[in-house]
Image: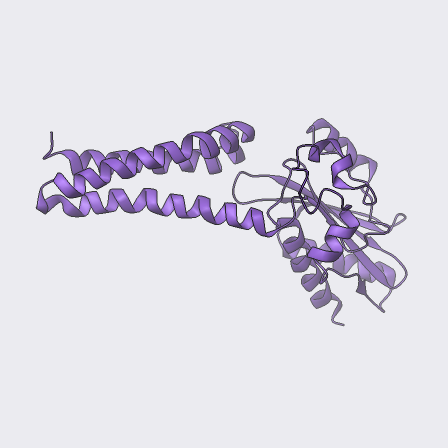
Length: 260
């Protein structure tokens, strides 16, 4: 038994790797529900499996045959790397505000079309937030601790404080050309289902995350010489800063297309 322990430890570590791969990519391909994958597979069961695998690998490294040490070492490296990944995500979650709705105009954020709202309703997506209401007064954030620094802040206040670099984009070209540039820029950064409404002056698209396959809705409002952007997740409480990062990327792509 002891002689085969490094091999068993390695197989266990590989099985752990598969478990995490299914949890991270399974929702994207409809294999598992994202709530089960994120809540149960990763947050609840994941750390337990990591601990068991690491313990078996340590015993194998200590007690196993010297010639098989590399198997035990690899078996230990896998849970260590996965634990580091979970710690990194947790650290990221602590470094950004727990919101999933970001815009460049917080006083009058761009709105989505009826078609997009219907899609969100069918997907049982998060409600679209009122930027003037404190988080603590919204159902989704009722569970925030009383001492949370953001509980008494609105989306407008949080975005202004956490993402001051997100600003409207000025343009001097024809409005129709600006809308075409926005549409092309959305395609440049990988958005899909891009739709333009010339009368409303809006361009919408859908983003999908690499992990989990979460879908976010993006809208650009092309006004008189100014373009405002908004990105909203369909599910989840915190977006880990992805929507803000997306607006930065989209802003840069639009500016490059405008050539201004």
